Length: 180
Image 1 (tube, rainbow, N blue to C red):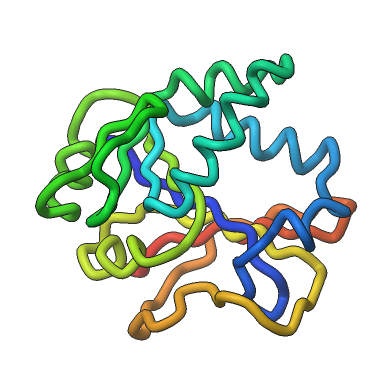
Image 2 (image 1 turned 135 degrees about the vertical axis):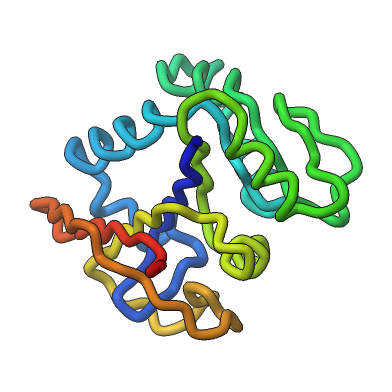
């Protein structure tokens, strides 16, 4: 069975919104190497609408600019959970109906892991149905004070630390699994 892996950038005060404004000073070779390895372990993406729409605007342009990883990102199958999106144009399938059942079905299909970037509304469903197998929280050594918080409005959920990966930049990736 494939694993569903979530990868999320987060500040020390729990903010997940606008990582391009607070995260870029910390993006370096170590950051890129870890992200590439995580991305390479997967052969499909699961995205919420907001993340899908922002990625769909950026990644095709990156390929045109010659970014080597962009071709793989653009070609990779994407599954988008949305109640409002009617058409997906960036090699994506919109999940219609019961998202939990469809994600469980995707996990049962042959293949490598499924990667989910970002944290948002879709996480309520994934947590409720215990569908995420592994979380990679990239803790950035920055406090921003305001913004959307990690897992806002989610009921208490217990996780088990599997490993931590510190970078020289101060980022620490905390890898968790759900407590069973």
